Length: 135
Image (tube, rainbow, N blue to C red; front, side, top):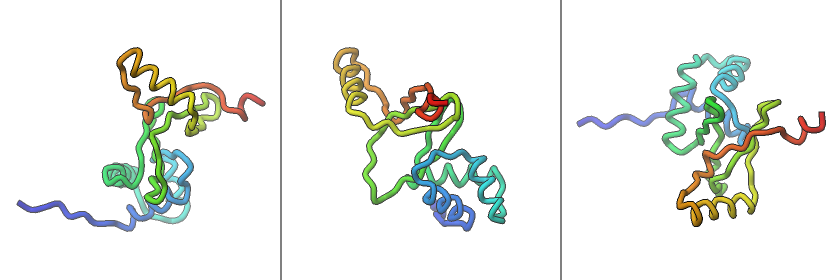
């Protein structure tokens, strides 16, 4: 039986490099494609999707689903990252990590009281961000 070859392509390296440069952001495949095309990288949207799926499977990036849209974030190997809930602004579409002890307490309460384990990394609270509230 022949094993699949695990190789890096220039396109895969370009996708990963972009995500590493934007490591605190959540980006879509369309945003990545547009960014790379602006920099004269020849790449199609399907190729970006394939590279993103491959990189997520390898654990080099994280994939999130926000309101039916897949977003991706660089998984820094030198940085410990716990599973976090997220905040999504319904006005500007911004996505933010939610690091809060109260959320940990809430998740613990749900488990202990309701015998249900919340998957924090897939939990999203929708509302308005600070900037949009001020406008």
